[in-house]
Image: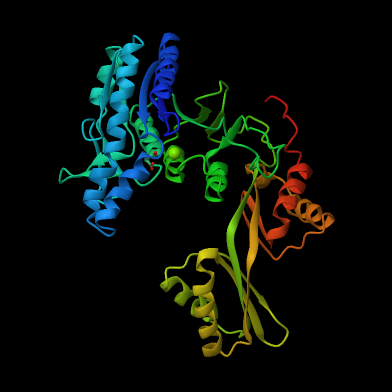
Length: 409
Ligand code: ASP
Ligand code: MG
């Protein structure tokens, strides 16, 4: 018998029929002898609707009240699911965040969980009752309702699993797992049986929006095995877990990409101490996030300084860079906003040489020019022209054998 936390997302809660379908799933896990604690999101679209209502009165109103309003979406779905479970013959009891209680700090709309009192949930499990807990919400020390940021129910699920020392946290959603890359770009993309927390973080931060990033960080920190599964199609999903040294790790787990990039080069900057800080300081001060940075030395004692930012910040960054260039006596500013970043991710890279050269060779053979490169322990990223995105992803997917079924480990 295992203790399992199951989190059902907004699409899974999207209608009364779907809620009854979820109740059936919970009932079948219980019938197999497992203890189940359920966490739910609001019905899909509901949180957007509630926040829109709030903003229609006061766009920049008191965030405490925004949370009071936004948290009601989940209060509805916990009650509905508890009713559906009882109807399916499963004793159930619904809990808002403050009834558990899930204590958070007071950073409204992006609160962090500080402490969970799992006493009542444990007692319910012992008594054969399924607790149904509202995701996304908690209570601060002043007694005000807080929310954890959009997509925060994933974090509630993982935090409850950690507090209850559950055997697994299952995230039920509308996709059947984590894929080697986006199937819309490469139809041969394959569902991964298993991936490490670290790899998932790299894939998530690069745009594979299956899970809220914070929930993956949380799961890694507390070593909660996390499984992404479909509510609608039966299957094993993808297990996100710790690296297991007894297994033969695949070299590459996936290919992530990001279309929202823009590149700027401050050319011919005098090559002296403090230049990097002089350029990046004002950009950072304008609250513009910098992603990749490359600096190289020219023959004439000057350097070209290239970096990437979010495409939405491109124009603003260009203005800052032009101003800096004239102050620093640089030759000028060049830029491009039709670029993308493509990344190979895999923990197997740590112990294997030659991955980068294989990647660059494959891209070259496809006639794709690399504009920038950056590497970390488990990731190699290249910046290329946007028009080559699909070609690059498919080329790499093939070169690294990602479409082939792996040997069972
Ligand atoms: N209902 C919240 C949202 O839409 C939380 C969640 O679904 O995870 O962001
Ligand atoms: Mg979600």
